Length: 242
Image (cartoon, rainbow, N blue to C red):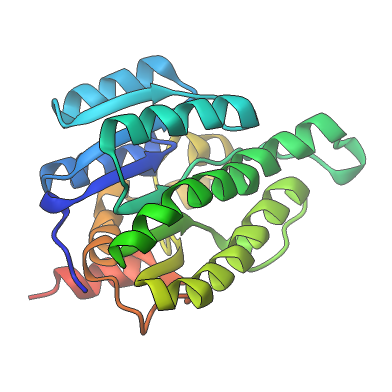
């Protein structure tokens, strides 16, 4: 069942910069009530200010389970039940596996998978009670392929791909859709500034150009697409085409 963002309460993680900030601004423009989560307090406050009074910033360390639970409690106290969850937060620190350590590896997985589980587990009962909801995990090529110097990041993104498939299966009876979505296009973000080659930087686009795909998944809740990985660039082009 479709539902306009103007009638929705939404959580967006990793909202202080890059794609998460673009999604937050676009959802705010569509009228959604928002809780924005990120570790970067200054960036988060700036994005929330751009979004207006319907956006509440909640600083949180998503690698810490207790702090994530605190942020979730704050979000639910503000929003009540949640209609759409966009879990975008991630860490990418390139290093050879031989140089990886347990603390760094688990921190990456905790921000992606552990926080993803906690957020979904918290919003699931409210979505099921309303028999409607959308869960969106931001994935990447690293959730499809393997890349050198990305053992933790690839593991995290691959895990979210699997979790989304299970949530889609179990959510169908409750009106809940679950999708992963890859950018599908090189984006100009702080993460890409650190990791893209000069050649790729010639191709990148403003992440706002990918946000129509997120609006579509949040509003349309197409169960035929649930459980399937989406391409934000392609879907946005389809949605925005006259």
